[in-house]
Amino acid sequence: MDAGKEKEKLDEVEGLRLVRAFLSLPPHKRAEVIAFVEELAHLHPQPGEGDGAPAR
Image (tube, rainbow, N blue to C red; front, side, top):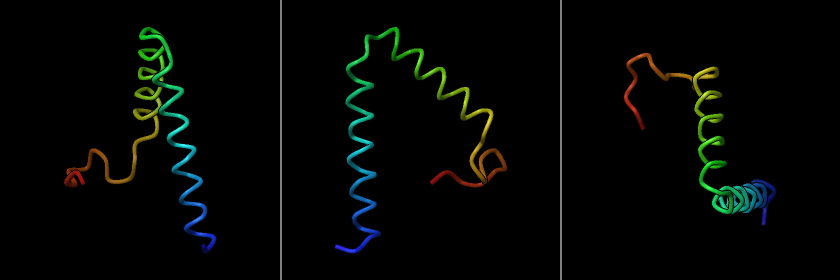
């Protein structure tokens, strides 16, 4: 397995761990996490976001 594929696999595993941890939170804590992430997304928009570019 080359380094790129191995990194991709590790990223996938880490993502699944984060999802599992999120789902194990009580509902009020999940709401706090969602609010925090939405706030970050508004502070740091992705390139092309809000400039009329079509969504992918």
